[in-house]
Image (cartoon, rainbow, N blue to C red; front, side, top):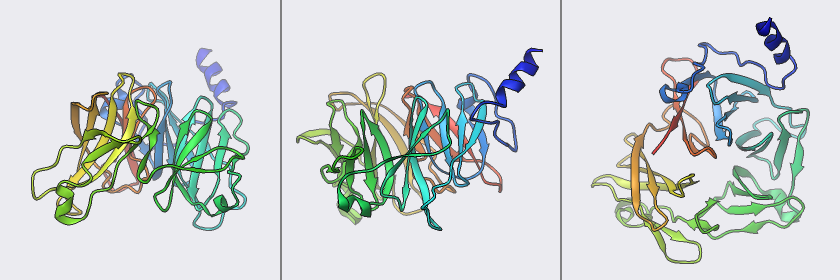
Length: 303
């Protein structure tokens, strides 16, 4: 009887069970080994309750519950979309999700409990109509976005866009402001350039460890601050295109490296975000699943 009631209730929920080549392991440790999800995805985001959301290339939004159970939601179409337009990134908070994509100058807000249509978050500046938004993060009542030109902007509905400093992070550091992370210089110059993470108001916050030659520092990305008040960074090094190494660092408020962990890179994936700090404090990681069929493994890491 209980099983029949659960099945009946599921018919009325916005999310329906996801079609999967293999069933997800519904256990508290399911994310440790990796939860298999079939399909191709552009980004992922976490929620405070431990849920993980995957933005599918097929306009499916897949949710993985904290116990590993999966469900899916078909996103409403964007009426004004042209061929080739697509969502690239998302952020989730409570029962709301926000999407940005190429080549859209606005943010699309969706109620996950009543996912019939989008509400539009649009800047008031006329020139904002030319924006192409690729990445998004939530900032109180506004959003931090990165456009196709690499600019970091703060966007709030019906208000002018605010452009942040060059190379400013999407997320705020411990002091409530973006960090500034200059990109590594090309060739040998990157042995020193780009290893320094700056406070927006000035001053060095952290120096990313430099790799042993001939490896060079390729990028430093700020993933946010975890529940232990540590700043989390993703650092990529390599001597070429095929030997990149990915390392996550946890850094204290004083700029001291506290922990590090090497992770698998996004080889075989076409994702805007393959690694992200979740609001529940875990580090979300997507890896390509073994085999020839499209699919990923979703993991949660802890430093």
